[in-house]
Each structure stands twice: as C-alpha cells, then as structure tokens.
Length: 354
Ligand code: NAD
Ligand code: IPM
Ligand code: MN
Image 1: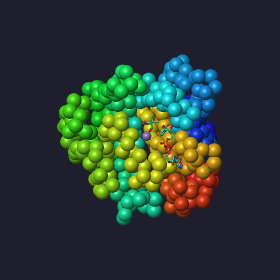
Image 2 (image 1 turned 180 degrees about the horizontal axis):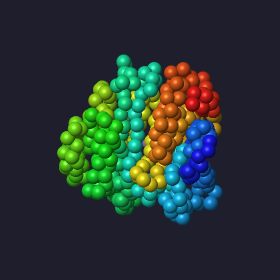
Image 3 (image 1 turned 135 degrees about the vertical axis):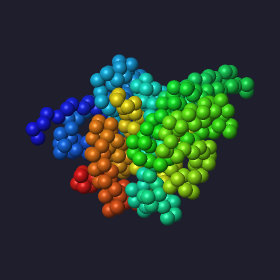
Image 4 (image 1 turned 90 degrees about the horizontal axis):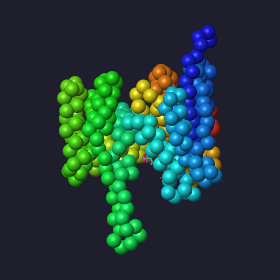
C-alpha cells in the first residue's frame, strides 16, 4: 500500500462477563480488515467494568469521558453487568454515562434476518425481516430523574419520571426520516403509548406528524407499542424504519433480536453523527456462559461492522455482513444456534470468508 492510512482511534471497553470475550473477536476481524484495506485503526484498551470497580471503586473517570469526546473516533464496547454489583452503578456510569454525556442520541439497532433457519417465525425469510430501529438514547425513562420517599416503610413512594424534550424527540424522529430517505426506504413507523401516557407521548405524536410532512415521499404510520410487539411477530414485513423512545426501544429490540435469529446476532450503534460514537452488541454480559468460550461473537462482529460505516467504510460493513451470512448459511455457528463451534472458531470462519 502506498497511501498513508488515516489514523482512527478506537477506545475499547470489554466490560464484564462475555463482553471482553466477544470484543476480542470483533477486534480480530477489524485488525484483519485493517491489514487488508489500510484503514489505520489504533486501539486503546481501558480497564473498566465490575472487576475494576470492585478493586478501586472506579466506574468511569470524568477525565476519560472528556478524552473520549475530544480524541477518539469510536468506542467499541462489550457489555456491563455483574452479579457482584447488584446496584449496577458501574454500568450506569460507563454505558448510560457515555450515552448521555457524549450525547449519543441515536441508538441504531438493525433487525435483519440473514438466514430463515434461525428465525422462530413460521415461513419468514430475509425478505420479510429487514428493518432498523431508531431508539431515542438520551432521555425518556433512563435519566434517573425521580426519587424515593420513606424507603423501606409501608408508606414508601418511588417515582421514576419520563423526560421527553422537544429537542430530543425531534432529533431522533428527524434522524429516522433522514435514514429512510437516504436508503430509499418506504415507511417510518413511530411507536409510543400515547393512549395512556398523555403528556410526553402527545409530544411524540405532534412532532412525528410535523416532521413527516417534510418527507412527502415516505409513508408514515403509528402503532402503540403493545401493538408494535404483536405486529413484529405477525407481520414483520410491514416495517422499514421504527422510531421510538428509550425504554420501548430497549424492549422491542430484544424481541427484534429473536426474530433475526437470536440475541447473539443483534448489533447496535450509539451514534451522534460526526462525533465519537459507541458500538456494542445488544446483548448483555451473559454471566451464565461467561468464561466458557461459547459466546456467539457475531453480534459484536456485526457491531464492529457498523463502526466501520461510522468511520467512512460502509463497503467494509457490507463485506462483514456477507461473511456473517456465509457462516450462518454454512451452519458455522455457536451452540445456542444449534452449531458446534466455539467463539474463536466462528471468528476464524468469518475471517476466512473475508
Ligand atoms: P444477556 O443478554 O446477558 O443474556 C440473556 C440470555 O442470552 C442468556 O441466556 C445468555 O446466555 C444469552 N446470550 C446473551 N448473549 C449471548 C451471546 N453472545 N452468545 C450466546 N448467548 C448469549 O441478558 P441478562 O441476562 O438480562 O443480563 C446479564 C447482565 O448484562 C445484566 O447485568 C444486565 O444488566 C447486563 N446487560 C448489559 C447490556 C449492555 O452492556 N449493553 C445489555 C443487556 C444486559
Ligand atoms: C441495552 C441494555 C441497557 C439498556 C441496560 C444494561 C441499562 O439493556 O443496551 O439494551 O437498557 O439500555
Ligand atoms: Mn437491552
């Protein structure tokens, strides 16, 4: 290669449980692609997660958050959550902290079935299940606004306040429409619970109608989130782009993970266009299978693919998806998908196909 590679700085946070195991596999794929295509990736690893927290009380150093914002192009994260930290305080500071403080307002979660063998829905194929969810990622019920009063008594009160701002709702809805337009997609579905949550979700309804008018070529429709769950199972072909709030987006994308073949295949990006963004599998730290070498690395590998698009290499994400599809077609999969391969074997198969 004669051309000097541009440096792309990637912060790596493996985290807990299977997090470090699957992140290591994603990095093997990225390193392979970097060698072949001269992307100029530079990885810096950060020892953050339950072990570190239990050792010295560190969750997320504030100066590191600033460094991530100022000097990194992307963050590659495994998962956070450990039974030894029941408060989950480290996950809140590291994962939700990054989403909030780096203002990663788009949680982009594709739901794309690559091979019908892995879909639990009868007669569904890749042509039926191919959509993306735009999950609002910086407000909703996740801000921690609320409180407890008379905790531990019979008169206890616990409040969890859902925050919906005009700015926050508008920017995620705009991002969903812009994506639909850019990718030539037919429709955007907004999902809320405006029939029960009259204040916040009325705001979603009004903003969706307003922004939708700016995109006359794109069909718009609305479903209450309970019906959305039903329709994702009954008629997933209806959906191209779904936009919804933080909590509903969390829940429907685990449902979405299953209809695309399982949680071991679901990838995500926590994105602020033009700024440092964070890529991670949708799944958690899976303490039940951690340390056994059997975790499915494909969700992390597909998330690494999304990161490549963010870094300006959409062509390489396409290659990653094709290689993953090749493995699924050939049954080169881990045991939760009915295969016999362990974590590293699956990655080897992906790299061979690349
Ligand atoms: P989980 O996603 O970790 O596991 C749910 C089930 O899916 C388990 O049976 C697990 O073995 C299986 N599974 C998950 N990923 C897999 C993979 N790659 N390959 C094969 N099987 C896989 O969800 P959970 O059990 O509810 O959560 C465990 C911990 O992870 C909790 O502390 C939770 O808060 C945390 N969590 C973190 C994130 C994140 O960091 N983004 C996401 C979800 C859950
Ligand atoms: C996810 C996870 C997180 C969320 C948890 C760990 C706080 O479930 O990334 O989907 O709810 O956003
Ligand atoms: Mn989740």
